Image (cartoon, rainbow, N blue to C red; front, side, top):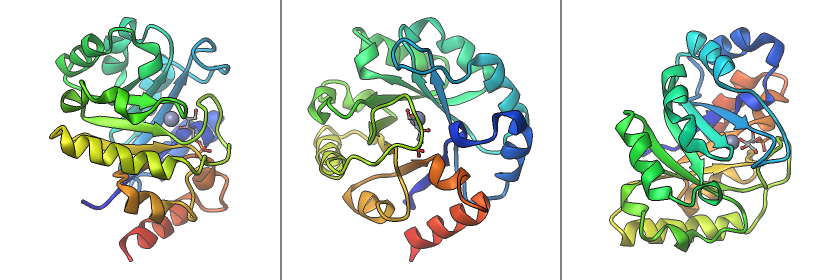
Amino acid sequence: MAPLLAPSLLAADFANLQAETERLAGSAADWLHCDIMDGRFVPNISFGIPVLEAIKRHAQQPLDVHLMIEDPQNYLEAFRNAGAEVITVHYEACPHLHRVIQQIKKLGCRAGVALNPHTPAWVLQDIAAELDLVCVMSVNPGFGGQSFIPHTLQKVAELKELLTDCGSEALIEVDGGVNQQNAVPLVEAGADVLVAGSFVFNSPDPVATLADLRAQLTA
Ligand code: DX5
Ligand code: ZN
């Protein structure tokens, strides 16, 4: 499967989210990655349910919602109703992860789990078969524009092996510091979905940057 590209709107112009979302229509973006931060699980606050709903009204691609929040189980239905297709919760925020995953699936969404950089892949062994996606954080969550942690490449390869061993069809997503230097090695290591925020939106032409990235990955 060709890797999916998921630009992160965290790096878009928040005062022009309609235009930012609309210009990605017909681009090489497969999903729109939406970063929800609560100022508790991560030391930053981004945007919430009403803004997600507004994005949804103008989006052509599925919304890939990354919940960097405590107690995500309390908000799953609201995020689904706001338009989330993929809902990813953090392993570190869910003492009852199995239950939360079932709740997400019951709502009709694809269920993902994100791992912070210090959390090893093997913690997912007993839940891997239930997952639609694993998001490997390649920066510490909370902020865009950080540098890619090189160890992620090894972790993606380990996770790929674990998922294969468990018979899991979960997609591997990589989030944080993704750019044209690490995209190909990440896909070679096993990544299926690449999230890119500042690399895309801080470039002079985000649509062209996505097209170049797509071309690089299909070359
Ligand atoms: C970080 C977020 C990322 C972020 C990626 O907490 O989860 O999705 O937007 O941004 P870049 O690509 O700039 O690292
Ligand atoms: Zn994210």
